[in-house]
Amino acid sequence: MDNLREKLKNCTKCPLHCTRTNVVISDGSVSADIMLIGEAPGADEDKTGIPFVGRAGKLLNEFLIKAGLDRKKDLYIANTVKCRPPENRKPTKEEKIACEDNLKKQIDMVKPKVIILCGATAMESFIKDKKLTISKARGQVFDLNGIKLVPIFHPSYLLRQHSMQKGSPRDLMLEDLKMVKALVNSCKETT
Ligand code: URA
Image 1 (cartoon, rainbow, N blue to C red):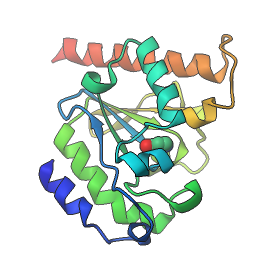
Image 2: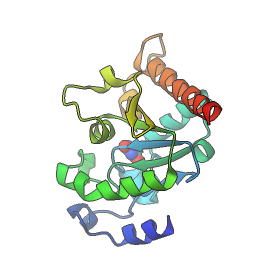
Image 3: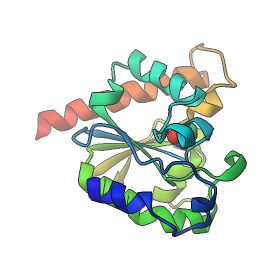
């Protein structure tokens, strides 16, 4: 992990290194059973060097607590791309390719039982189905060489959706995170 951190601190593989303040690598525990992968750092993450600490991150934390998950102990949190794209635009294909090996190394190191794919950018890196949207994919479990992949809504989408009624995006987010917790528990029972 320290090796990766040292290497990434000086990474110049894509143009995002010109505008970043900090490379944003991870938060949580390397021995967690659950890995959560987001899109890319925003302004707050770029400033602090920690993923999901801005408004979307705070909302994510609320949902994790409601689902009975401990961000620091139960999860290892990372992003598809480790440096902030200017104006919070989506990372380009080239930027994602440049950062692909870093994410692979993180997965190999953590060896999670479940990977939460947070939003479309993270989902598209793992599930190669151009027609699949997050709305269709959420609630389903996909496979990556034995690791369970669970797509969920990105919390920044939920910042604009306030209802908690049954079937609303926020309600489904909670349902999905509870499913993740149950999946991890069932993996533990069978090992
Ligand atoms: N959105 C992301 O996808 N990742 C972060 O770290 C923050 C916001």
